[in-house]
Image 1 (cartoon, each protein chain N blue to C red):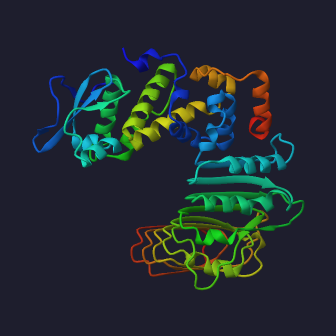
Image 2 (image 1 turned 135 degrees about the vertical axis):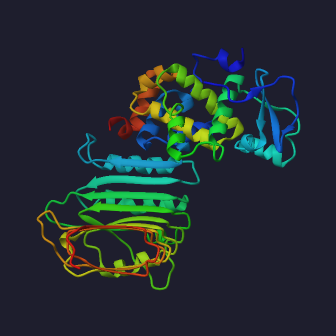
Image 3 (image 1 turned 120 degrees about the vertical axis):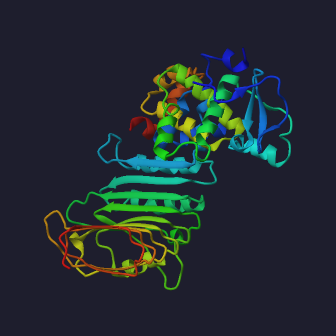
Length: 283
Length: 172
């Protein structure tokens, strides 16, 4: 009989090394990781070793407003001991432009400073009327050397940032999922072509609010997979006819779902092996 | 669970089988296993020993029983390149390790975690940490204490203070 077997029935999990427990807690929603602090004094600060941060705030939960959620995120970030963050995922609902929105940029800056690899931000605005809000991302996201996956999705709001001319942006970004509502033309012309190593791109456009015709320039030589989803608004209004110009000589898979009669110009795709077009097309 | 490697107590040091070098591993409770070097070097710890030329005699695997070491070797055999024809088959085989249904499963996963940590086997560590995390999900504090045999050393006042400090996590 060995030492390990003699300990059966005892608290073995607490005897695991800190970094193993850090691995385990990093696989939980951050809220659940923090809740382990009350198990025993051994567990009181173990959650501060997590390297994945997963926050989710739904407005209809019983919590007394978003401010306690914001404070919770602030506190977790201030106590997090990991120097490198693997995943930073945050999902939240909000109904005014005060409070939570002012915190988003500092949270993203924290993740960037901690060498984040995968970032997902889901922001859903519940406006009192047909309002829309821009959410400005910190410019430091453009030059983040560790970011490999970025997923930006939103409802009744858009993520905005400026892409300076002749600057290589997102130097390591391989996977990008981007959702646009009232996105500006300048950003759509520069964003995708500024990503030098992008391999997988998914664009979702809700046509509802776009008054101007947008041109999406997808000049990405490294791109292998491209998905474009275009949807009319809930009233069925088709909105503007947008234009997509694709120049992706290594593209292997193309999926387009379009109910808005957009215009597509697809050039230089000799290796495409899987193409799917769905919706009504104006060829 | 079957023992995939041959136990051979008379052997010590490294030997070769054909052109493949064999390493000798000894568990905490004295069980000896001969394992192909190409397989055992899935352990970053053992790979470091081989690279430094320190794997010439019997390698003691501290704090790991023969029973657990046999499971580890089975893991290595399945994860050897070409051992399993497709990813789906491998995932199906791994699924026996990634859920903890009772305390017996739980104890096996602890032993594997200790071994995966000592031998530094990233794939096994990932699988076992994921299994424990899944077992934590959805459990209340009391349920966790019961399932993992964790004894609280907090008095009521200290526990209340911690709950208050992290109120949002406990209320949502």
